[in-house]
Image (cartoon, rainbow, N blue to C red; front, top):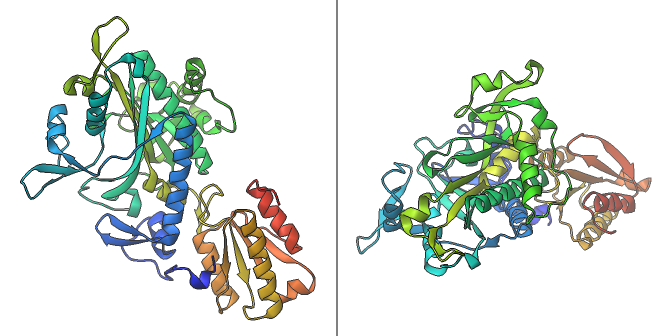
Length: 446
């Protein structure tokens, strides 16, 4: 993509309504525009990152054998009355009526709807286990929407639901989801720590939140510092292997890590003093096992192997897809702008032409652009006729992890400059070598 043809409404000044880093940089980098309080339009740059995050979630869910689907954003209030949550959910639920005076609501979550789908189509244990998920827009009418996409009213969320015959089977689904989430977050360049949490309106006894440590986090967290040394890496996991998934669960949750809602000071004090940590955290996902809470209330039953009809055991598992974008920025930025991890960057590298209109510089930039595009990667070519300072400032602000700078002086010596956004280190090399380095970074064959 040529920057001269791209819609990127960059702002030089920080908007007054932006109080945290991610909100400031998303507005300044032209990623979002507020439509009303807590509701945003996603502009091309922001939408590209949103889709990168969404695709990672889809890929890891598919790896675990979970099936994608899509449910409506508007639900009938009748289903929520069946579960008993219509009145219990509170003012965050946006309640509406259609022209026939039927009571409806804008989906804050979808346990009731997925349970209705299940009970209408499944009646035998032979169809279990079953896990389905969607990535869909949700709405919660926050009293004080703030911090941009971190606490908006409309948000994009992955919500998955498992149906199992027994508690043991459902807890395996719980562990399986923890594994998929750990891998997903690491692919996004994040370390998200699973922490024992409170189930709130969802119900159930077993739940973990995944939190990214950041000074602007809404939750106070208490943890054993050993947990920050853990990485999922490239380990292979057989998602059908109960013991293997349970072992990963044990590894990542056996050390103390809790939010302020479930913090136990006595247990925390048992952690060696030099490893006790307190910080702020941003919630980016949560997994729940809630047993038969919804299946009993809504008649979601199956005939078991002994012929008896029993309610299924359920769990739900969410990832805040749009919130993740803000969390990544909070965890990865400097005073110049965003620093995107390679896994979610909107463009794989930037190409800066220091002298647009110079025949040799234009030709070299075009050759780089064509070579990188041929690798199946997306470069952003800054071909605008403006000073180098403005071009560098834009690249720093939007945070592409790699920049190739091309100018007449370097070309006379047969080199271009490759710069890492994260470290600021630059290296001169022939254009062909720069292409090879970009290919190696993203695992492409040059």
